[in-house]
Image (cartoon, rainbow, N blue to C red; front, side):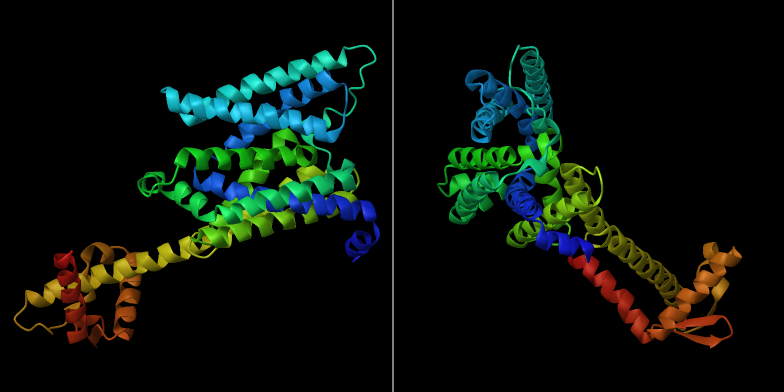
Length: 378
């Protein structure tokens, strides 16, 4: 209740929360395409590569104006993305190796430039380091307005070029055969992803920005196989983490906003990995247990079927120890074998003639023979 009261009464908190939510929506939507294209770590490289652009923009203009610094970051990020894609296209170096190479060179260069700036007499360099770790609490209404404008442009482009982005992300060869210019679409999408990354530098910094690109999409991917739903869920997860992380940092003393947002986002990812239907670890465990049970029952029914077919009377009963001797050797296995037979009995596939004497039924014979026919058809 205290957090809600603070949220509705503190104007600064509302501004920062809105900015963080916008960042979550933008990075969630565009990050979905990066994850689908298996270029999620591009965000890590570009965010680190933006640092020298920020430093150079300050050296050239001697201004800490956010728009100028972000323009420098955008130019540096686009150059880094172009270099990465060029290396992959024109050499035998793999995508991950190109990422590591460009990331280390650009980030190292950025740190060198920041060190140089700190040694310049009378340089107004204070505050530049906020782009390394992020400082969402410094977001002003002007910064949020910039995010609104850029976010509107980026999301509009996603809607307008939805079909092109979708087909190029999943099957670029097929897109090329249909007459789409995959090169132009890839360039546009890369520019949009880089722009989304630059927008978030002031909020979460160059180090954590990659999490904002990858995590919402990784979480939403666990819940659906449809791209449109995945994009919407990514935006929702990103916005929620932005708002919750900002509120937590405001009510917990000395808790930074950027890391708080990423922690909340990480929790959403872990929850999605654990309980999401079909893909979640919990549901996968339940499904595997169910499949294991079905396989065991089928094997036991198959053993009983083979015994029946090798006897003159197909419905002659057999002792439980004869049906599956390997399981009956151990007391635990004998108990499990008895439970499986009882389960098959409930399904009408076997019948217990006497105590621990079991016989297959017509339904059981039909089930096994249908399995044989299905395998033959395959």
